Length: 335
Image (tube, rainbow, N blue to C red; front, side):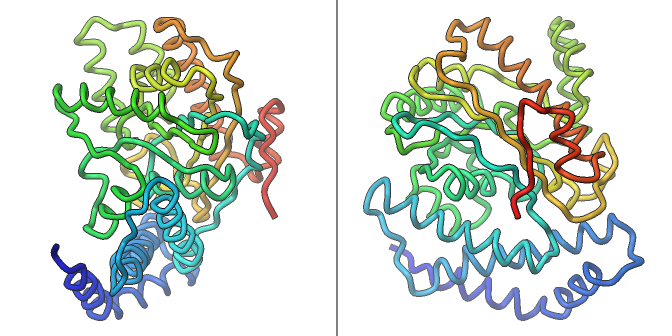
């Protein structure tokens, strides 16, 4: 087995060599007067350095990654995610403003359907699931989602299954989703990103063009009415819902991380404060449709709610302002 030490050493060398640039990025974050696009990229650089330190140096140097089954792997991932999003956000000048979590009965698993946007957002969803819902996260991911050897090892240890997203790989992915859902324990959260890819305005436009080319004009019109989210692919979520019929559903909306790559990739203005806002709402299992076409229509309706939530969260001054627009979804800030 190849030793993890060379990866940790390489990460350490990168941080040492890049130390002056990281100091400059920290000054850009702290001092007023810099353009918001520059400030966002400085935050991204600092967060990337924190990523290397947590997952490749602290997570790999001289430590054997445990392979002791479900709980051991999830505990390991949760600890690293907690470290990364704790002081990593602090160093990068990012504030996490998260609504209180929904109350889920402890006697059933939960399906978490999350919006996909921004750097490091996948791990953030797993972090929130562990921290606020107290659940172990199981999911599938594209192979490219594990950016480094350290993260790839921790993901694999915690039950993340990597799949190719070609035609054959998608069939394997659906089988994995069925397997994860049918074997889910009450302590488990089945995480999925129905959009399938990170949001950008270019991808959003391309998806709409693809739908029109395929004759799906009605879906293209619906997508045009939701400019803050990618069009969804309901098949994977439907597979989870039918394979775990007693599972409740949580819809998880988040926005702010996409600002780190610059507003030029967005179809809407940057928040401009370095803030990441999170809201989620709970749908009991008996309110989730199970018939395929009905489920797809229901999920598209949920994503219209996500789009509306993002529009409000990006324009409102406080999370109380967001709650005023969505009174059925309490989004009070956590102090």
